[in-house]
Length: 504
Image (cartoon, rainbow, N blue to C red; front, side):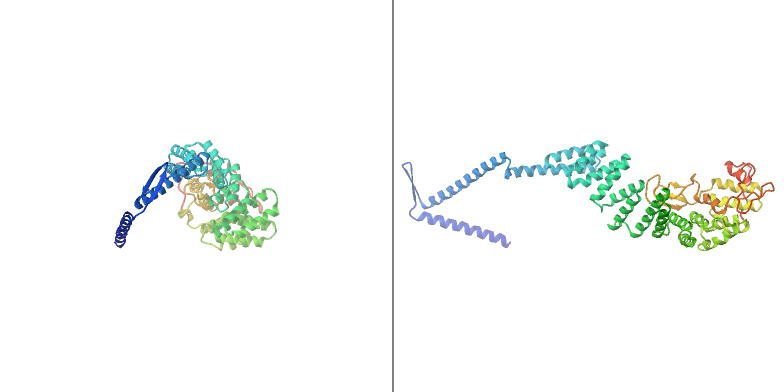
């Protein structure tokens, strides 16, 4: 309100001043006389002021026209001028509009439209670092891999877009299955941006697939250094890589190096079952059974597993069944209620031919949690206690169709593996295998069943016709005369086969 009033007052004052000045000039005498070409011009005071103002205006217009002429000549010459800046702003506006439309088309899944808009934007902007990226992604969307590869190669030539180009080429090679080239590109991308998590994960996976365990451990350390991996996860995965490295050394025949690497892997992650088993065997090979016992007990406390029991059995491979049962008590006493402990005790008592104790060790697993291994042990108990062949066959028939029990299962794709591996053979995921019961029955035999002969040996034929076994000797049953083997070899049980008797 006050500002509006002030402007009105100022306008009135200016008009009044101009009026007074014009009146003063009209009333005053004198003027200006100008003679040009014999003609004399006489101007009064007011006319003189107006003529001066017109002269100033004419000079200003002349200077502007002269500046415009100079700017036009410079524009034609290629120099930057106001005219060139005007056209540049106009082109920039059109270019960014085309770029925006290209991004929208890319987000909408319209690949060809996105490429057209990117080409138009490049025409106006001359910024290939922006438009080439849209073109490459749009080409991939439309399936034009050749065009996308061509654009990514152009991006590699520019310092500011080199990482984007290398990463794009790496992903293309991965999709094409060229892991060798993809590994080299991943290493180059990692060298450009070592903090990039996706590149870190890709490089780690490719190094593990190519068995470059040393390089994978360096990449894993870089992930820890840049805060992309929790310390506990790093510790476990580094142990996995160290274990894999130890296996490679073992394959090459360098036993001492393999032993040291296995022990190092176990120290990094004591709960890693394969590392514990390999480290225990390393101590056994070096004549240090006490270290192996202590290591296996610690691993059994974390998770009871058949591989640990197998390694524990190798500490004294020539002992008899009674001594083995006695020695295993220091392991089975750690977690007596665990399912694996009960199965292990049942197998050990079977080897010692203490069938009632084997039944007590097995408990109610045959009713509450039956699987192939449990039912096979139950069949062996029935046979050892003198049950009829029909009863034994009944247990074996149930075992043939029962779940396989805990196995090494990939958490990512649920693929079952017969033994632990650092990388899933199906989905190539790293560190995804867990010892658990698979979601559905598969045809892969459980590792626990494969470990049974190592721990307890084969059941001896107690028939009068069977030859007696000497101490420490295992008599293999004849598949043509042994009813248990004969039933196991016949996957189709008889229709009138009786149901197995209930476990006492």
